[in-house]
Length: 388
Image (cartoon, rainbow, N blue to C red; front, top):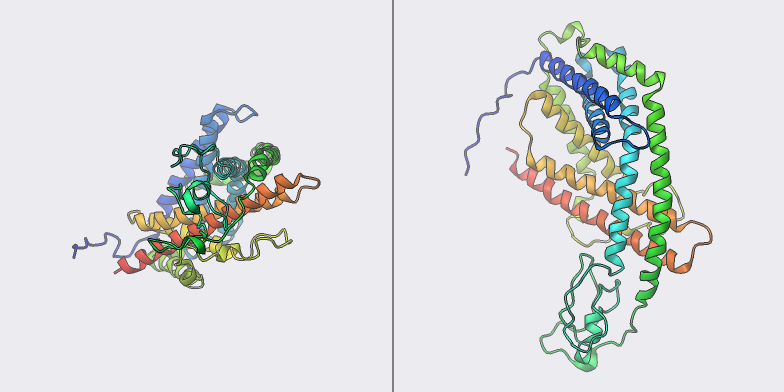
């Protein structure tokens, strides 16, 4: 068994560590704000401006998290007034990036699902078209082209596909169920129109989010927040009882809140790679967020608070927590992408092929949600087993 090195933060952590952390994050916020103004933030904003906006979000999230987790040693009126304002800044700046990433994710998924990705050559020389991944419940092209209807060397996809042949090494040819070939044309033709529809809707949403962010950064509300952060960079308003206080119990409370939230998740179900739990209510007419996703989103936020609390204590980053956080980020992205596909499918007077492609895309993203839950379950179980 590998020897564990002593934890440098095993002793009490004074409130001065929080003060230094908040001052450093406030300095990062002001530096990013200056860079954002220097690089321009108009319609033709540069990559440096986008990176400055991301830096603003990162600093705002960390300051807000510190005010939330370690509120007992901070002036309550000041902390409660600044924390929601920083959350507003972070959320407003995140919308444009979220719409861009969502559009890219959906277009890549459509490209993959429509069979546009190059595939290996088919097994038979007489095949007239390359094999494409089959829809769930239908045989693949390689299966249809192989002699006697048995499965040829078809390219497997990440989604589970139900085959119609026996698994015996010498299958009974008469036992093979005859299934008509799926109409791939509906998905291929509909995918192009679905992609165009998603591009129009999400590009419009991104443009609106960009305009909203520009208005927010030029508002008197944001200027007031920037003034408070500038004061924070020089002085952190601690309460008199902060002298001699220990930050570790507050950080431990953040970890316990995370553990309680994870305990409430259906990890036993998520431990199965293909449980289809994420598809329940997938066709519900309700436009509200998916009912099963909210607890996972909450765990994602609590995990972030836990990670930031460890930063305040000076604890080294744990790769297992990073892996779990990445899985929950994938979960959030896939969930929102599926919601965008479902919203696009509700567009009035769209062609049936377009609606069909959007339905396949929605199911694909819900399967991504399921895969992300499975990845988080594995990462979290490893974290629990390795924790002394």
